[in-house]
Image (cartoon, rainbow, N blue to C red; front, side, top):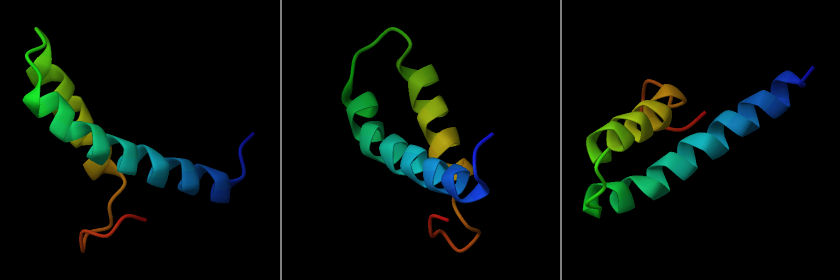
Length: 55
């Protein structure tokens, strides 16, 4: 089982990675482009604090 501190760090890294990949997905011409964009936004925003900062 993961340590809660490890899980929080993983969530932050996932959110940052999604934020990094979002412009690439938006500029792409992939058939599932909108699905990928929606998924990245959901991941990015799932682990942000209410004030917009990553937690």
